[in-house]
Amino acid sequence: MGPLEKKFQHKGNVEIVTYHLSNVKEVLDRVKCNVMVVEMTPPNAEGFMSMGACGGVGNEVVLQHADMIIGVINNQQPFVGNAENLIHVDQVNFLTEAHHPIAGPKAAEPSDVEISIAEHVLPYIQDGATIQIGIGTISNALGMGLKDRKNLGIHTEMFTESMMELCKAGAIDGTKKNYKPGKIITAFAAGSQELIDYIDGNPDIEIGNVVVVNDPSEVAKNDNFVSINTCIMTDLTGQVASEGVGHMQISGSGGQVDFVRGARMSKGGLSIIALSSTYKGAEGIESTIKVSLPEGTPVTTLRNDVQLIATEHGVADLRGLTTVERAAALIDIAHPDFRESLRSQAKACGLVK
Image (cartoon, rainbow, N blue to C red; front, side):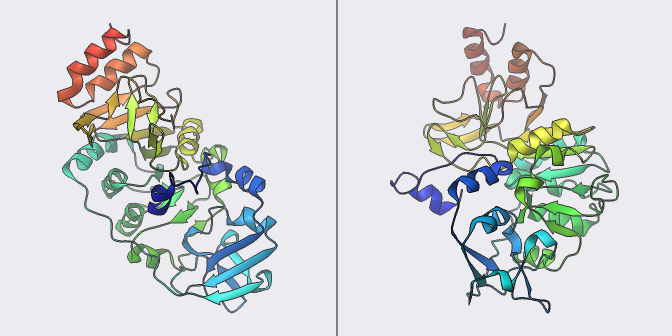
């Protein structure tokens, strides 16, 4: 959910459809778009154009329905040349040109809090694992912290700045992947110009259909798969809110649940949710760990799916814990200033003894 969507969501001319990205086909099959406009690279010698950095997010589905396809040639789109990301000039009704940069700024340096979160999580990620890292500065800190690992593989929804850095550091080679070894599998990429240049013509990177890439059963084909995502807040039973607070949508649900469930299904797999223990609210600094989520807040990842939750104060491993034990473990990783208040509230409603 980008800045325009956030700005207009309550103006009366935008409505929100909630879905996991692995389910984008059922959404687009219902909409049945009859005109498709998509940015493409200039055609190669055989007449094939690449759908660029974001070619995997629904394009293949829309192509099946569209009566008219308009290709917008942008010579700054990277050419990612696996079959799923290519379209031939003969398939396109109209071509036009609009050359413009698609890169964003270089990722910001992680804060001390984000580095601390990463330090708690990194021991859980071993050499030879296949990883998925979500978007955001906490995720980038986690990614940067893996530079000393060996033989990592990537199967992810989004190829990020930190993943590029891991590749350049030699931590990624995909040799231990038992599914599509040696290949970096992703549905889209976003980042700095350095990242765009890195994926351009890179034979090790495949941009696939997000319906397949994010399918939990597809994810689980990777043994020792580790999913690393962030959230906005969690309650003391482990319900994770990652897309909004109350009825205010902050981001999309994306593929978090796809990868959480894929990691659970993977042989040796593990799912990690990371967040800072506090945030700046309307009334000052507040805890991101709540006795209960604010009214109207959507639960993105169910408590039954959550395994590890990490803050800068430690890791709560919720696997196999009772609700009483979960609450105690989550209070232990809350900010110290809020622990007594959380414990008192939890006792009042019977969540802790």
